[in-house]
Length: 338
Image (cartoon, rainbow, N blue to C red; front, side, top):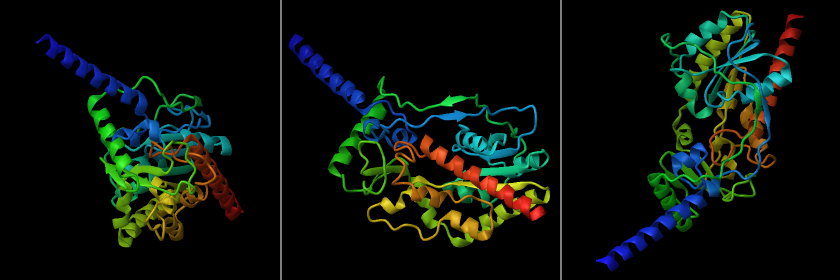
């Protein structure tokens, strides 16, 4: 009996050592794609230090801001808006989507003294946001609260995550990656696909592969009639806001898979981007899609390898482009008035 217990204890100890060893190797799950898809941060976490952004405060201002922004997760950290403010000298106030209450927010924004009204949405949610404009006045229109300060990103490598189910799933995916290295893999709602590692600059160890949300691929099923109907709603918003003497700008954050589509193995790049549809229709929007596509081999980690969002380098690029677009739009308006 004693010998049996000794063997049992030894087996438990070996298993525990393997478990802790893998947890130490995998590193704490930091990115939304590694966390959701159960991929090891050791393989897909960025290894390059991101640039620092001087974040402006966002909250309740004493006086009306020059620019009001309604946005999603690409807006909630106040990163590109801070770069925009720095480039243009304008005061920016940001709100987050709450129940997709676009009409309520626009009605409130039109009553302010702000001269520029922006809506930001990630590309994959474009139809969801604009195919039907909604109202839900029970939700308060509160700005995002962000304190001012220098914002930097330091991916933690300690302490490791000891969540049994998370680590078990991550270990299985790591094994899948070893035996199916040439294949596109899907785990939960995250796609892990091979790419040409000479096509895009990433700092993670497995820079021959790209993680992105599976929902990005739903755009392949969008029909042009649906897209045009959503664009028609955007144009109506733009018209309503311009009638009040204000400027409307739509910020479309391109999906990670859209920007890096030219690097995918065995996949065809979309013929026309949503940004191109919008610009052709006359929507005020900077073409971030083509801008980001042009820089995938110039800027390391334009999107964080373990995340669906831009890196700080990406937020700097977007903020500067939006700021340039705002300055150009204001200049064109001034010339038109003269």
